[in-house]
Image 1 (cartoon, one colour):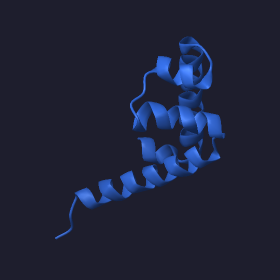
Image 2 (cartoon, rainbow, N blue to C red):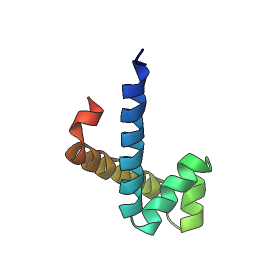
Image 3 (cartoon, helix red, strand yellow):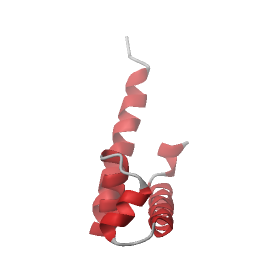
Image 4 (tube, rainbow, N blue to C red):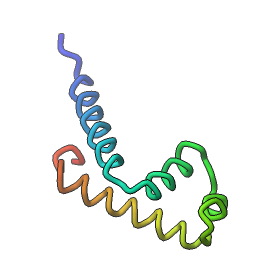
Length: 82
C-alpha cells in the first residue's frame, strides 16, 4: 500500500531544500538576524544591541528579509505553496 503522507513528506523536503538554498543567497548580516532570532531565540532588542542598531531597525530588516524570501520562494516554486 502506498503511504498517502509520502507525497506530503517529499513536498516538505523540497520546500526545506529550497528555503535552505534561499538562505544561502542572503548576505551575512541578514543570515545573522535570522539565525539569532529563530535559532537562538534572541529578541529584536538584543539583536540590535549586538549589531549596534535600534530595535525598530532590526524589525524593519527582519520584515524585509521575510518578504524577499517569500517572493523568491513564490517565484521559484509556486506549486509547493498551494
